[in-house]
Image 1 (cartoon, rainbow, N blue to C red):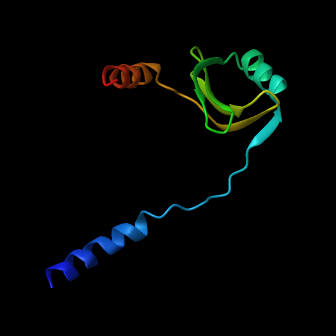
Image 2 (tube, rainbow, N blue to C red):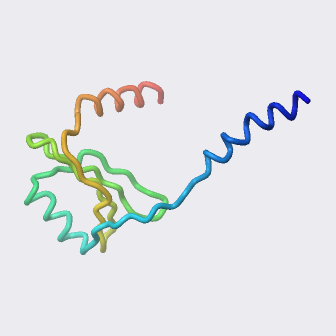
Length: 104
């Protein structure tokens, strides 16, 4: 009986933990043009670069004056803008980076 109760309690958690695919539009183009546009038109500079397992790079570009940011995935040929936003908090990012580095 106790096993049945535990099973019934955990089934809803398993159902909610399923991964779903959500379609999302992204803008892609020639990597050189996209990255030049972001750095010249929006004056965003690379803040953080992450190498992926699929031979591409994820870049977070930010403008410290306007507080805008762009998340872009790119390789040597193509770049796709994954997301953009405003009001990034570099102080919070620095705190996170310090915490992460202190645990390594």
